[in-house]
Image 1 (spheres, rainbow, N blue to C red):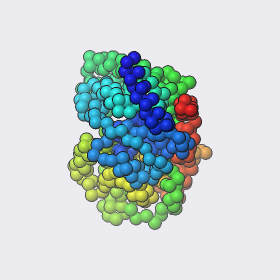
Image 2 (spheres, rainbow, N blue to C red):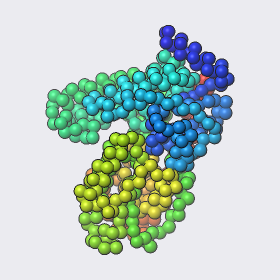
Image 3 (tube, rainbow, N blue to C red):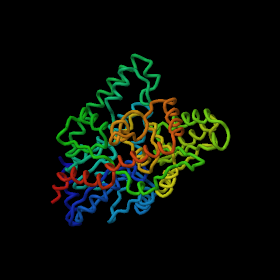
Image 4 (spheres, one colour):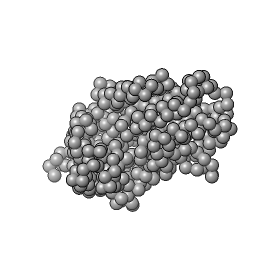
Length: 455
């Protein structure tokens, strides 16, 4: 109670000084350049346009960079310019939520670490409304019960999902369930108990959120199961820059001499770039040498690097390309500006996305809006929300493994230019529901109950 009284006194003093309320976003990696960051900047832009008499703050763990540099990065990468300045609170202990700090019991370690990081944020600045826009659910009770804030959350991916529980209980090897555990009955049983306890705590932490927004049907299903708050939960698709990308010409590509296969996504392990490279190698193996064969194809991996760990991962991927003999046909483009992304997508024939159970897939939408023929993993958001028929017409392809992705890419390249054009048209028309404007309308409607408390 003493802490709560002290923190609220700080907020009241600040509000008396500023003469207006403040909304704060918790986004420790706001300079990362991924889909989650695009949601952040679009949400800020929408709220600033609607609420002229409210100040806005972003808690970030980015060091060695200034606020204006972060905003300039958002402009370059996402073509987003905020109408008014915002205030950044630079947190010093982002290491507490880094996976590398917790080689074992990573999820609970990061969750506990986020509580301490949230406490640092709260003691630095006490807002009126707190929005967790990056999935750190365990920070919400800190702001709700100690800071006395109204709380909202935008969930990109649940910290723990029922799919993860099923994979462990069935002893199914996955990225988050290595062979050393899946092959051991005792360790699998321990991990099931660990996951169940974490799921229970995760659900308890979620009760602090007054408004819950989720980014896809897949995430909605898991959050309803884990958080059990259907009356506070709504689906708000993330914003994709379809407006700029649909301006790219959509012509028959019969004159193309080189076909590029483009992947858009941060260089994180779950994106499974290794699978993309191996599948591409299989496609090349089936092609003969020459200008119309192997030399006519290239794989372009476009994505953001959040930290040194991601940069090291890119080095390993480059090494894999050398090992498989495809380094001359694979290009890496890191943290590229929006104009370069648009140019690469406009020139591409195939879009590639291999993450299993991708929660949504902004990169998938961007590829489809630009006019590529998409090949995505047959799971999660791409399967349920994005690569779905449009008015009965095909919008892309789905695959599950190395052979499946290679077969799909080969099939696309073998289609006639007219058949590819039909799929590209359907795909472009289907992604209109993921536009910035649609997101802003849904986001503002969802936030209305919380923002109404500021009056």
